[in-house]
Image: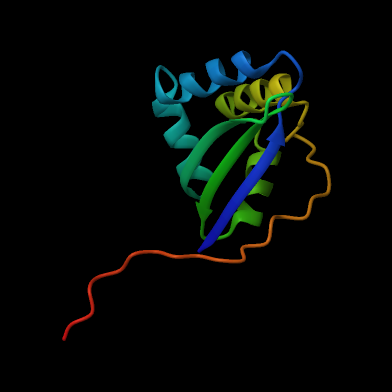
Length: 120
């Protein structure tokens, strides 16, 4: 399982647009969002806005069996919802996932997950 955490700078003045976009994912666009995530292979996706004072960041945490494949599938998708999602993200951050820039994915350096208690 790939565990991915991305930070994406929000363009100046676009933090509320980013919040509005992400609220739509949990509201009226929830079913389309779920269909897209299932189609591309994302099993979990969490979004945060981190306010550093002069800069806001979108922080995205994702889990997928193969994140590289999921990102490639999403980037090449012309599905209506996927195109809307990419347009909203680009408007808030300037990141064009139709043609993503070369990127080094963050390195996972520690991972803790609670498991069942050990038997005595």
